[in-house]
Amino acid sequence: MNLHRNVFLVSLALLTFALFFASCATAPDNKSTTATTTVTPPPTQTLTLLPRPQRIVDLMKSRGEQDQAMPVIKIASPAKDAVINGSTVDVKLGLSGDLKGYMPHKDPSTGKGNHIHVILDNQPYEAYYEINEPFELRNVIAGKHTLRVFPSRPWHESYKNDGAFQMVEFTVKGGGDAAKPTTTNAGQTMANNNSSPTPKPTREGKDMASSTAGALDPTKPLLTYSRPKGEYKGEDADPIMIDFWLTGAKLKGDGGEYRVRYIVNDDDAKYIDKWEPIWLSGWINGKHSVRLELIDKDGKPVENGGYNTTTREITVMK
Image (cartoon, rainbow, N blue to C red):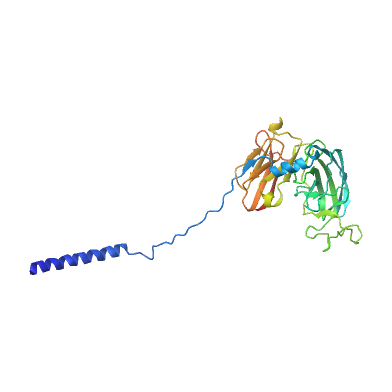
């Protein structure tokens, strides 16, 4: 009896010891325990090429023959190599050619319409809608400048016929204060140099950011960046068009030797081989950079005053 009792007590002791050892071995070590959290990866953007959006196709049909027009544009002012005293540059243009009803004008109900893209140096273009009224580049700083113009459709696709692009170089003396606009708080323009302080009537125009012309050679190939630009909302946010003007060069798909390379953000470079707009779909909300470069047959950027490689930042808000 005592023997059985002793065996039972020894077995119980061994079992208790085993359970205690197991509990010590598996007890959590607060010092070595690390908390885990679930991190949602940021959204990724994959852009794909699309054909011309149907809403643009429908709009073209409603415009009659306008999109077959061959507008010819001339810069009447500033004149080639003109010297302008003061910070305001008056832009005057002439429009001719086979217009087929094309005429710059803004529809008050939509805020859109045919217009002219006006580019000072290599800044983003400004839209000029009422070509028979004065247009002003305000607060232009002293120095040499380049002005480029070409006609555009309401959705900012440029006309690409011969004569639709014009460029002049001019020089400003005096000029504006790069840190201060030359408009009053009512939007009226005040001349900074060699002019009366009397406010001018409100005119279509734009206060220009500080810039001067690059060392541009008009005999060399020139890529003029047009779109994309600015903010994109609603139906305009996807797809988004890339468009440009090309002077003195032909792309591979048009029988030439050049290519246009485009890079969105830091993605892989892609190429445009025909001089026509493309539409990219798949944009996510936020800021994006778009770079266009003119590339020669050896895959090297073509230098011309710094204008053939241009980067713009756009904002997408769907």
